Image (cartoon, rainbow, N blue to C red):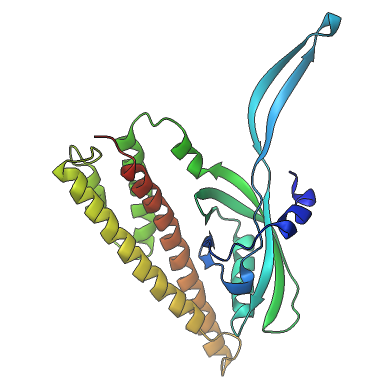
Length: 261
């Protein structure tokens, strides 16, 4: 379903209020949560018409549609949150987009907001998919250990950028038997995963509190406004790194939960 024809579908769908929707450092909440999010796309085909009416069709691979959704920023921090999302568009950086069991790496290709007042800002966003990260969960895994170590290696890098050390988890997963259910190493790896998710959760909460508590619009002076903007930018960067790390840790936890004996 192309993005331009998806609106009637989204409007008819049930609310996603019970589903966590995250895009980079932004955790959508309340009226920001859309009624639905489209995904899917096309299979690129090369059609060869042969004499006599026969056809040969070559499948050339997936062609993912853009993901689009809309909502409304509300409350006292509506402007700040809308600006933060627009800054992510301007930055042009790859971001994790997750909801339910879906996980994509995307770029924000379009973001449009309509400022009605400081408490009510409708928005619409369009994301272009770089990679479907969750598709690996639906395919046979050649080496669970290799995938887990690669994911946690990436997560460790993201977390390090935000000042969080996940190296104990990386060490636990590298131990012999760590991906074999029932072993002591597997139990240790599961415990380290739980600790990492807890630490990430606390760090994300702290970064969100810093971001929401930064006063940019009502600063008493230009210097205070600049300082507030710098603090908000720093907190936004930390939040982006932590959310990205969390996405890879969650995928590893899902893979490990499905490990065989």
